[in-house]
Length: 196
Ligand SMILES: [Zn+2]
Image (cartoon, rainbow, N blue to C red; front, side):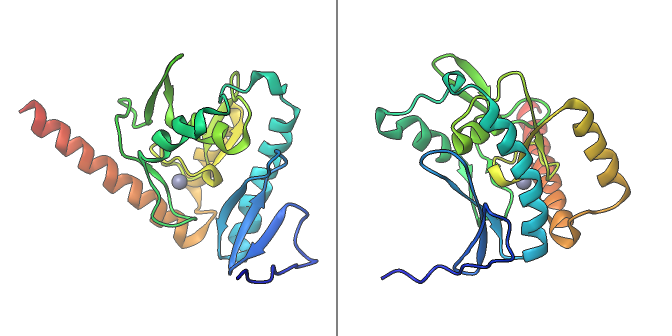
């Protein structure tokens, strides 16, 4: 039994609402539904950022895709098994090894890659090579594709400055930051213990 899909004529073309939550539907074939949470205002903000990244990603040559399809998605399963996904709009924290600065690392045949970059490649089916992948949530361990966007170093720096001044996404942004901080502090403590 499937619930009838809610069609809202006021939503932008790639933003859909299903089961009380908002989703960004990618341009890729097959399309992927990226969860944007249940808050309309927040979903619209995220939508704008993801849409820009998706436009750019659609413009990238397809042959550059590093995520080889097939193999029954074995690599994808292995990858997502290392990501803690408590809810669609939460930060999805990387649970395996990280770099000194807190970025998740994942081993592929071609070498070790940053987990958040691969997360966006898996979500869009396109390579992010040559592009900066920004964390919209400021949480380096986060792999939620909805919190990631392709951008430039300048935008990355501008993001941090803007967030330093004001919280653009209200309470949930603070919660996201706090989660990240608690996570990083706990990890630092664990590392210190190991060294002692
Ligand atoms: Zn996040």
